[in-house]
Length: 300
Image (tube, one colour):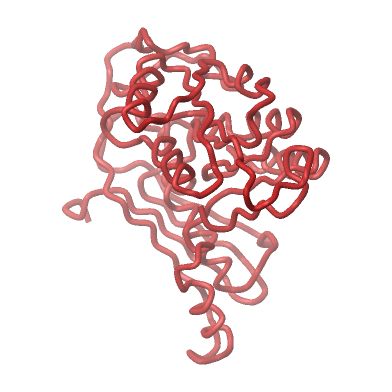
């Protein structure tokens, strides 16, 4: 949770060291396979002195109730919401954690700012550039704190190492090369559209995205590999380290040009996003070359 500083007028008044901040978690993640980032963030915030997990929200009733029971075992009693809009209407909530699929990050963050909540939104900040800019506008207009976590921004020694390199200790920086390698197996291929799980309100889940036919075996995590809802591994794990490459150059602005090539190789499945990708970002100081590799090592 590094980087969160409650040192501004928060929730309408100045918070002192002994005040309690009530947090609502929107989106809990899956119960099986890969996932559960919302649950991880929930427990991370719960461990911070002065933070109270006051509410949880998920449009999958099964996940919502299971987490409610798990929290009760830890003596944490929370309000539960299926619709994030109802949580935002809760005047007791000071800040929200957004761990929904990528396509709904911007909408929920903007609406949270409008509702007077501060926001910790999981990466990627948004599904596209336009949405990200609207999130920034909302944060400034409503005077809210909005943070998106990227691993290199945490106090793990990255900043010091990058400063050391930029000071010429390794010579002139010719380019920065980032690699995101995470083996991703095939997500399978269904012969026909499948219904959403009975426990899921698909209208709420889709949110600003079209309620398209579902063509994937596993409903929850595999939305990452669909263009309408995810950004592939570039916008999943990769965005942490692509930001780290920019951080290595000491830059806080966008590249002058970007080029990307790649595709989905090795499988014939329902995935749409690339599992092999090369991205070139042009900066005056030095270019960034970033790779996404998703096939198991036996394929290379």
